[in-house]
Amino acid sequence: MYEYEFVKINASTSFFTNTEPADDYQEIVRNYAANGWRFVQMITPSISSNRAQPTHYELVFERPLP
Image (cartoon, rainbow, N blue to C red; front, side):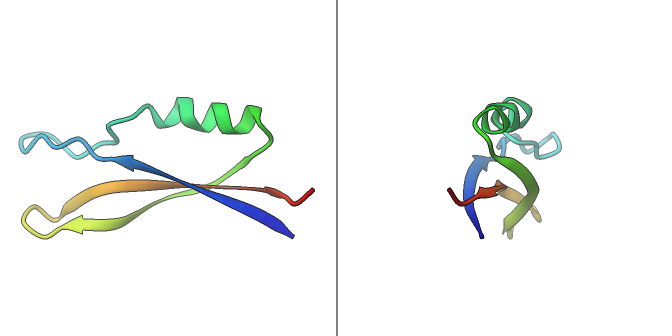
């Protein structure tokens, strides 16, 4: 059995650039790994209808239940 953690990262909002995470996702992954979490995947659950770009990302982590 596992427990899961979902971390929402807002996308940058500049119209003229590609939409990228506003936060340093690599640092978030490193911090969670240091606390026993395993990175599972990054998903883009929401798309802005006016630009067809993600509004945010979610990082998914898991670790065995104690």
